[in-house]
Amino acid sequence: MPQSIKKSAEERMDKAISALKRDLTTLRAGRATPALLDRVQVEYYGAMTPVNQLANVNTPDSRTILIQPWDKTSLAAIEKAIMKSDLGLTPSNDGSTIRLGIPMLTEERRAELVKLTKKFGEEAKVAIRNIRRDANDDIKKLEKSDISEDESRRHQDDIQKTTDKFIAEVERVLSAKEKDIMEV
Image 1 (tube, helix red, strand yellow):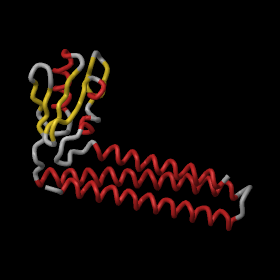
Image 2 (cartoon, rainbow, N blue to C red; image 1 turned 90 degrees about the vertical axis):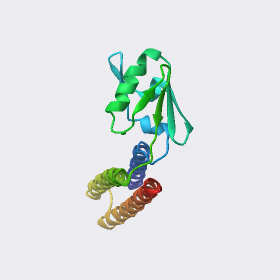
Image 3 (cartoon, one colour; image 1 turned 90 degrees about the horizontal axis):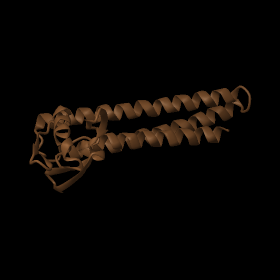
């Protein structure tokens, strides 16, 4: 039983790391990537729809994102959604495609992105610590009926070691992203 609690906690912590990595891909680090548009939602026939479900999004070079909508009537809606987003990009529409030029990041914008990166990292750490707390609570419940106090302490120490490992992974992912952002 304690093994399944530890395994479940580890799987949930792994999902928290995956969510962090997914969130960090949506941050602009000076080069074009289709993942920048993952959070952009377009109002399309009354429903909020991600851009990548309305159009082909690709990067012909490191400074340009090309959006080719399947339905040409959605061009204006996609353009409006990009303008409203927090990306700080201005789309240019040629009637059939939208081009997004990715400018070089200013020092202030880099600092803002690093702050946002740290915020995402802190959220991931909080999620991991909450998972640790839940697992420890489950172990303590078992202590009352199935396992001894010593076993409970040992399992809680194992959970803490797993937590430390995942917190270190969050730090590693964050430092890699910050390095990527600060790179000129």
